[in-house]
Length: 163
Image (tube, rainbow, N blue to C red; front, side):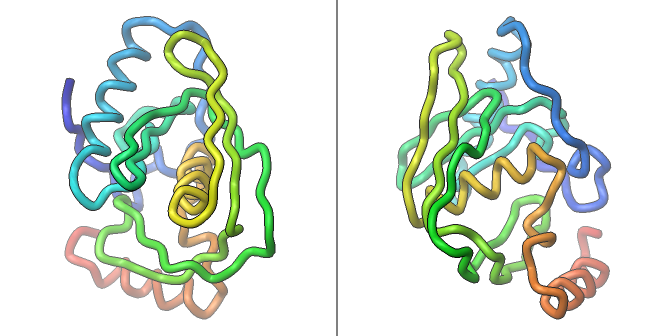
């Protein structure tokens, strides 16, 4: 379908708690196609629907060439104590900071056929699952930073050319 423009910090849709997807119709199928097309670009690990301006619970992922999507994802389980993990976000371009993330995560949701989908793992996959479900709850990774780092990051946002 289409590679969609990424919404950046300050756009109200990024602070919106997303609505669960009800009926799977042509609009939802088009959304999934756009999410997949948008995440396929190099350097992208995930794209959540609000990042392309849609306040519905869906995200796509691209982890080590494994590309897919999940509808109505729920972060069902995390394991291990949260650890500082280097992280960036397409919606906060150019910033990279350590966010607290659990080392293992599992997301449960459905696909376009209404069939159950389970994604689980560690490393970049665990980080992406937590990051993308945060987006669906209206949170950016900046909220996972310690107070001092968040203050520095917000200064970087205000000084950025895109803000």
